[in-house]
Image 1 (cartoon, rainbow, N blue to C red):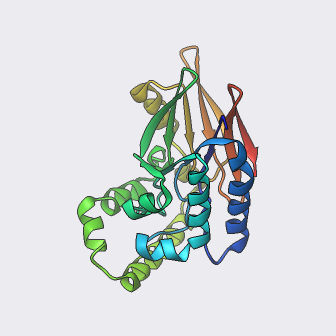
Image 2 (cartoon, rainbow, N blue to C red; image 1 turned 30 degrees about the vertical axis):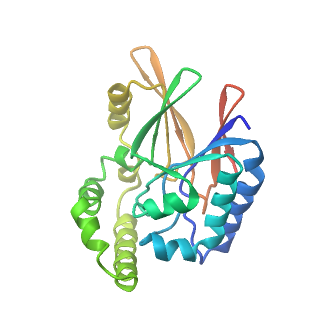
Image 3 (cartoon, helix red, strand yellow; image 1 turned 45 degrees about the vertical axis):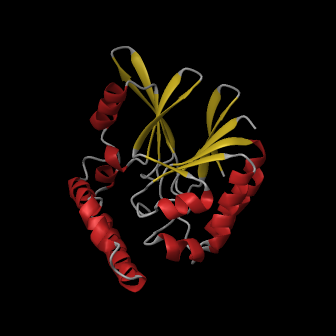
Amino acid sequence: MQNIYFISDVHIDLENKSVTNKFLKFINEKSTDMKELYILGDLFEFWVDDKYDIKKNSKVISALQSISKKGVKVFLMHGNRDFMIGKNFSRETNIKILPENHIIKINNKEILLTHGDLLCTDDIDYQKFRKIIRNKLVIRIFNLFNNSIKKRIANYLRGKSKEITSQKPENIMDVNEETVFSFYKKYNIDLIIHGHTHRKNIHTIKRKNKSYMRYVLGDWHNSPSYIIWKNNKIELFDV
């Protein structure tokens, strides 16, 4: 098992069996040659509480436990929908939770993994909201509520998010190219892999005779995809 896989924005939702089954099939089939799996956020459509949501998503949890027991190293990054995934999830699945910006090195290539929302700096309202909702004190207070209240809050925020998003120009919700370039300079990297925007593509930025690559993973409701690093080569595939 030598291959490294990357996925993002699966948005598993029990009301959408098609996506859940697609993910379970992917895990079952691809894990046979999988050395590592990086999940770059929004594995779930929403997540409010480890205890409650682990039970609710038992099939997915079992699949992740299974590949972990087979020796696959699985890593997960929080997305904007499932950032409440916590230590219990990590212990239950043996998945390591990564920081919001994480660098890995493959064959002398420095690769930055990120969910992608931090690159969308033109969406000023979202960035302000993100700082509030990710605040440790806010999260601590949220965790004091019971599951019923948590679900109501989560559903309200999801509804407001969809309403606001539908009114925004498409370009605002995409990455800001200058922000992307600042990440290359800050982290001194060769490549960025991310999701969030749901705009599957491969981009090249050229600055001062140097090319910078950025791979964007699609969402599994509309354009399910994965990236594989195999035989010293990186490729983007449809699921």
